[in-house]
Length: 259
Image (cartoon, rainbow, N blue to C red; front, side):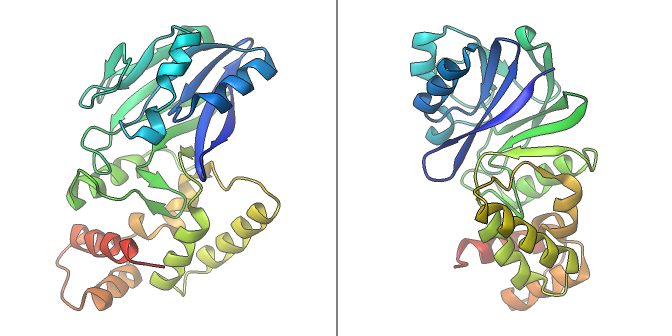
């Protein structure tokens, strides 16, 4: 079964490489160079490219990879992805036969209109590749979708098993947890996680993948129904927030300006 390896790119992106035997697949290759370096160093042959959404830091390396490896490109049906050979939507299965890989496709609009995630079992453990929908301690900005869409997308991801290892595409965890501590200062699990993740970064280690159990316990964007989180969002907004979507929308607006 495949192993999953982070390939850092740009200032804070992760390209995820899955390898089994002499074959590999990559998720969201915004930059071809570090992928090609890794493939050459490890003697791997690229078998497929998987894409979650159309932003350039997730797709910019596709053309150069295809020039070297003319492989299938799997991506969201409702977005324009250069080089895409298979359009995927909710309920489809993304298959990479060379890796014996099969991942369920979940529509998760919000960050972009057609964003998808891939979820399944790799090496005996549940995993999800979520692009820019769910981050460690946070969620993506709403560039094309609505708060209701993003809240629904996060709720769908939160329905996955608690031990799911979540592979997001950016190293944003520490800044997200600083915001979360402002929202929910009395959350002991959040304080412990912040210390733990800081230690990882101090050692030069990624904070991702994270688990859904950790996200449910510490990520304010999955905790809009928690009274302390709703109260903090209401106080920041300065107006009544009638439901969980309104709380989520206030949290997202608050986070947009948080420094």
